[in-house]
Every structure is written in C-alpha cells, then in structure tokens.
Image (tube, rainbow, N blue to C red; front, side, top):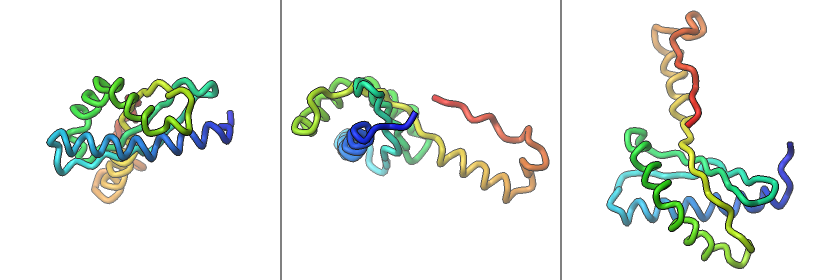
Length: 131
C-alpha cells in the first residue's frame, strides 16, 4: 500500500531529527569514532508507530548500540517530541532496527571479486536475516 503524503512528511521529519539526536547522544556518551545514520523511517497509517532503521559504522559496535538505543527509547521519544512539537500532535512510538543492507552488499561484492563466486555456488551466501 502506498504511503500518504502525511506519512512521508512525518517520516522525513523524524529521520532528520533522529539522526541528529542519536549521533549527539553517541558522542556525548563517549562513543567517539562511531557513525550512526538513520537510513529509513516508515510510519504506520494511523501515525502511531514509526519503524526506524539505523545504520551503524563500525559494524562490530552495532549490537551494543542498538541495545542501548532500545533501552533509552522513552528518552529519545521525549527529545523527539520536544523537537517536533510544532509539527506533530502526538509522537509515534519508536521501534528501532539495525539496517544491515550495506554490510550485505559489501559481502556480495567481496564474494563476487573473490574466488568463491555465489553465482556459481549459491550456498556460499548466508540468507539475509531481519533483525
């Protein structure tokens, strides 16, 4: 189903502000050298839930950071509500997911350049898993 203009607008506003909030929180929390970007935000039709896909570099810190982000969701939601109070009546619930698409693409490129070509042997690539 196609997203409405309102859903797209809210998703764009949330994506921009969340990226700023998460990156600032990471640097203030002592996580220097970590890049956090919000790659995609989707909002439900009733505007009550926003699914946030976060890309974290370097990948070895992704699990630790996403756990911290999920545990601090109420604080992040409050900060977002303060930032968007003139644009949104109610702040949607935030659900955070790791976006591993860049890592997946990188693995495919490395496999294609290497000796083990997944096109010749499809069993070499792991099935992509959603988190």
